[in-house]
Length: 239
Ligand code: C5P
Image 1: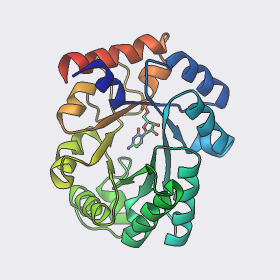
Image 2: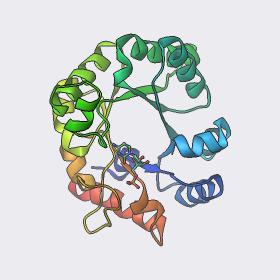
Image 3: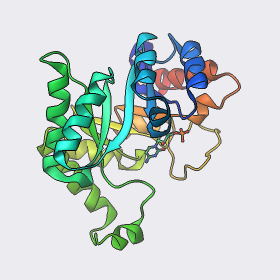
């Protein structure tokens, strides 16, 4: 894979405060193309943080996992896209009308220009069969994930966020144009932290991921730029 293509596939998760996020962004400029802003950073700093990262030339994945009545999600998706975010998340469990509303919201924000992409969380990777059963879902986890992914596709959603271990199945189900974004990625030898079922960056892409989300192996490294470059180099070599 070419280096420029490899850089486009890596999304660096900034799970930190604003000062550290901007410090990392300045350091990673030219080394990473995408940054992920999650709920903690967004609820603390608001849309400004997305704009600040966009101004530094990054694409932003705004991971707010929207889940509410369609009217609210329409407005929230529109507002999220208006911050300049390039990719946003919703919960598949909000069902078809909610997902269609998210798609309409980002289209409205784009006013005919290039719209933000929307991907769906199927079953949270923190949930196991017992947790699904506790909320009244008796389908096996994998079948529930398939069902929500299909529903997402039918309602104009661009792809899913899932574990690298589900990526092959999601790619098969959603087709080659879908976004399949996988966290739970660890370069060989890196600390696992609280991630348990992990894959290396090249394995994740081999399984069908379009993008990988990597946080602490980059942001917690002594040299985040070198850590990011090493992941890109791995993709250039092995993907
Ligand atoms: O630091 P680490 O590489 O584990 O960060 C992964 C990022 O992906 C975090 O922002 C985390 O919230 C997110 N994520 C995840 N597992 C999921 C969904 C999102 O680790 N199933």
